[in-house]
Image 1 (tube, rainbow, N blue to C red):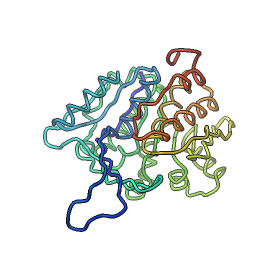
Image 2: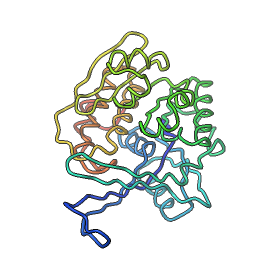
Image 3: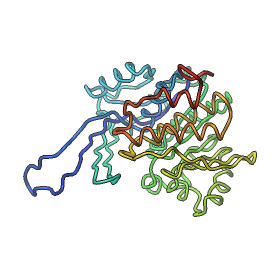
Image 4: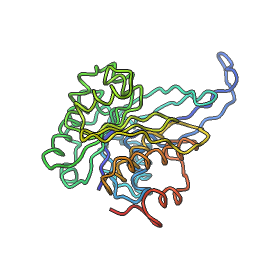
Length: 311
């Protein structure tokens, strides 16, 4: 089973109209959708046919109830703690024309995630652990991440990390972030995050720097694809399929899910990066982090002739 550790959120989308009416109502479009980087990853893993679980914390509220039920309906095992005094996290996503967006994150119960919320029996038997970088921001969740990675390493379970947010990493401090995720096998940053974590600009220098801390580095480059590098000397650039981007939210999480599923199945870094690019392109062409997209062609091209993932 692939276990994802981290944030569970309700996304509140607001499509900005041409102008806002000051001090009164403005008619526009809003929408609700499930989100959270770790939660998105877990759902995409299951949609690709792999056993999947989510470890995190939600409120003991109606939003938390609905989040748990949504995981169950997706086939994801919810190893989720319930917070009696802090509500489920929410994100307000303000979408402007094109791909422009701003996000206001209220982590709420996510910020109360702690070591005692870790289901150590399930973690000990996992085939892969994936950690959302958002979980490293506060002290309590950060300690849980450190303990989770430690437990995985003791059992030789591979660990991947998606850094999550340049702004939040900068607020925490790069050195503190790197200490918290020490021992991870794979890091999956976007280009801005990779530059921040490596203090480098050139992609080759970025890879060289991050390889000092992680055996495998995959830098997501948006419409340019992704570049991979390993300590064993494998390097390459994978281009994504051409697509018309609609909503970037969640595309990186889908990339990570496809990458991990393929890498776990084959150990082929180039093929895993291609799978990530292909699924990311499907998701960015739809609206919402967990948009219902047709996966038949993707699965046929990346995993097998029919059906789900085979491991």
